[in-house]
Image 1 (cartoon, one colour):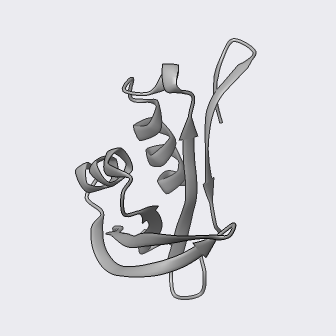
Image 2 (tube, rainbow, N blue to C red; image 1 turned 180 degrees about the vertical axis):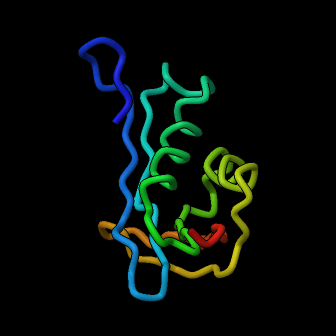
Length: 104
């Protein structure tokens, strides 16, 4: 979680590392006023550091989410898949990205 004083301004949600060394980033959310200040990068880096034994990190992003895709691309994630996903009654074009991690 990222806070300013007592106010929550963002969070990141990661899975546990599975037997193959893979983990998933489910979400990074920041308040609009907290964006473009390095907080998302810090949440991502802190989460990666906590993933003991992880060899890769996967994230799924809506294809039309240009800002999200640019963020992950700048961090070294590469697209590995594109698929349609039913999300709360709406069909979304989704991109799966992966970031190889150094073995720990």
